[in-house]
Image 1 (cartoon, rainbow, N blue to C red):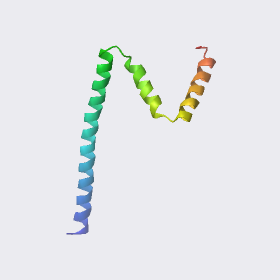
Image 2: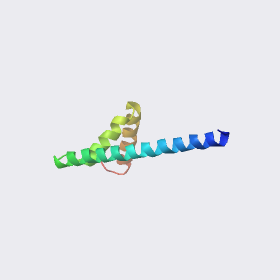
Image 3: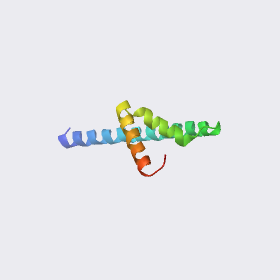
Image 4: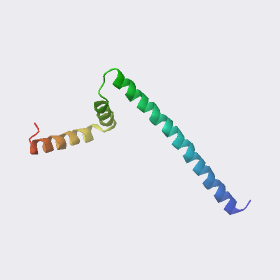
Length: 80
């Protein structure tokens, strides 16, 4: 087997892995959408839930910093 065949096989395998993972990602995205739809159906605010999910992913210090910046902007715009 030549080196170019090995390189081509490696590339093909990598591409196929990416394709499988992309398909799994689409499936997971659909599952997440289904959970949000379920939450909406029982009366939860999906927009707020998405904000909460984002906040929970953040480190506490990053979250505090963002809160301070948002408060500064709100005060500057008279939104309090």
